[in-house]
Image (cartoon, rainbow, N blue to C red; front, side, top):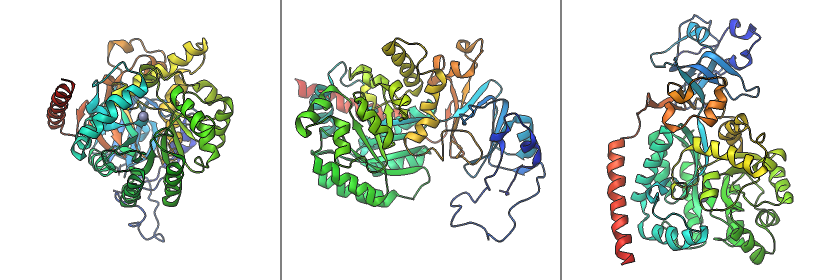
Length: 494
Ligand SMILES: [Zn+2]
């Protein structure tokens, strides 16, 4: 590929062109740092009008999610070496660049890929295995025993692949995962092309891949060592489960290990009234206050749920820049409560969105999360003006990226950002007429409307066709494994 810089025409236009500056030099595909060409050599080429790049993506509208919420009509993105090199009117992008690969965009809306900030991907295999139960009953009587009995490396491989299929299909490009056998998860993510934070789960009980918290911590250390810096798409992190499944010493040890290795932590935080009560009785104070008191928030932290923070705890979350992940479907299904999302946003807390695992949702549909997040806040506050469509879209894109520490890489479509994006087809009758694109994305669109999904410049789904996952094999493997789980459950209950 050729080094390409955009020339004056893009920069001189006042309208929306702040997003158009193509400043990113296009380095070699694999590792720009190690393979960088001689830095003394001139890198700026004259624009010839036929700079050959990897991919051009077009859209009737490009919803950039930049600071100004710029929407480009009849736009295009130029992508090279995984990076967005230009965004602007299609006529101008096409005049500057050519590519063998192109995603046409007649009736399509292009936006940043959705960020699922909290999931347990492989739990797709436990989808619908036990519903309509209280959280602790669901966990202790169904999920934990089922996991000890059935979850092994093969379960995680199949379940994660099934989840990646569903997420790519629905326009999710990044997810934060907490499950077992993180090496297997990382291998699946590596091969299917998604971006993910993958947790080494730490829990104070025997789990499918460890004998104890100390064992899971030691194995997590090794996992992080193996994967840190290995792929630009994969961030290995620690995932201590919660303060009711771990004690203070185990939590502190996990924070210390994460800080020593320079990785974030993802944890369930203030999810249910049970957790808050447990925290008060065990530690003498509420959940988040307890985390703060032991120095657990001294480092990048992603807190899933945060349904029951006090006003004081909301202040702590903002001060500590904890990334909060709101999971409206799971919170409603398990009746965990209604998270004070509006108050947290007003206090400056970084809030993203997540699906939680498919056992408590029961799908990985971020469109549903966006819509429910908006509706739940409106009815909770009895105020339809809170959590507007654009606020919710931010939570699933740029805001979600900031919440998980990737705000400088993904979440908006601007020159220099990694090329994680989706095309949504506006062909379906439910988009007619279209007055406001962002309104339709939140209040109308669903995962079946996603046409194409791109991560790091690689097309993972094109016109609804999955390109990196053998869907027939995954369907067959998942169905076969579920049949084994079902017959084992049936014989246990007899
Ligand atoms: Zn969870």
